[in-house]
Length: 294
Image 1 (tube, rainbow, N blue to C red):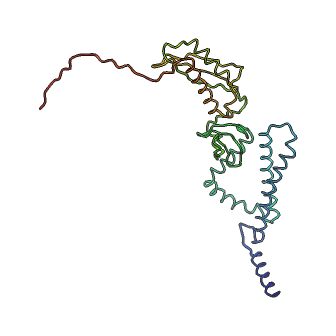
Image 2: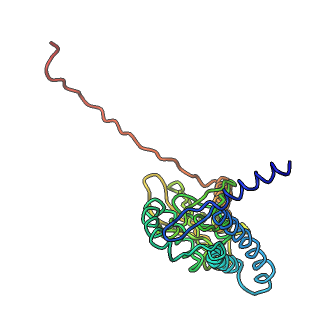
Image 3: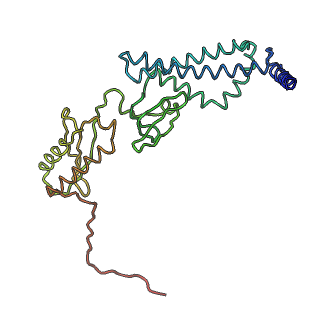
């Protein structure tokens, strides 16, 4: 049995020590396996150190949470670059001899992975400039929700329906992005309201101001306002403007709550909300027919 195990071990050593050349570098299968193990170890250590740095070091600083996230990510990327360089050296692989091959592969891979590379660079720009951050409510490309994670290639956005959407980082750099949480979260919401002709507009103004002011999410300063927009085809058109910070959290629910309250108040005060209508006038007269039937 020992003899069989010895022969098996000899074959394993032959396979591990099998040599092949890559550029000017002579590699063995064992060195390649060693390199792969070291690269995996670098990635595992990066994840551990990034979490440790964020939870044990940055948590004691006065930095904002999104800035802490950006710094931990940047530190992780730096660790990966240095770790990969050290791994190649420990595996006795000369990077300079692989430069020509790497350059050739880089051109071919670049065309196939240009979107991935573009998203990675966009991720670095996002972490550096911070146009968006964890917890921000954003709208981009028809997607609206809260940012929960910023990765190297993509950003995770969770909608109010708890649907997770993966958005490429390049979309946040190359397209227009609405960030409801950036800077001052206070924004103004405009609600169009139409009432029937003949309504008491002064009473309407007082009623609208009173009903929106009762909502807890409507700010007292600046206060709400009502504007008379135009004489419409079927209604007198007004606009209710309120200031709030709720649009950064639940914009649809906030708008719906105000419309429910407005409709109830108008009904209680017998102020009619009209629907489009047309008047048809028929004039009597004699219809003359020219020609005849064949």
